[in-house]
Length: 148
Image (cartoon, rainbow, N blue to C red):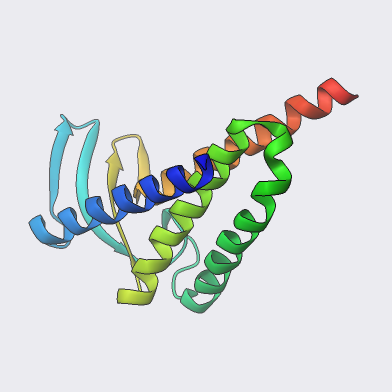
């Protein structure tokens, strides 16, 4: 159940924040949140996370679909690792689905989170995918140390 809760929460928050940015900002417009440190900057990304591989939309659509399917298949088998894996898979799948919906609807992904010392602009879905992958890596690393 935790997988579906996190998946749904990430997907809903991601889509709501992107809708808000598209509705209340013009392309390229930026507003400070924490001075110059954190800004909301409306940007459309034709590539992967952080602007990598622009124009490979078909590849990213297929990759996103496979990511969600694999998470759904893997989740029941991963329950032995505990709730962190359910949360992580929900983060990854919810993020992948959020970006997939953007690509299917408009051919680009709406990005809006901008940090002063980190040049790529990203979104909640990108953040969820990165955090989820980090958690899975950490769980696997810690479980292999316990077994070895």
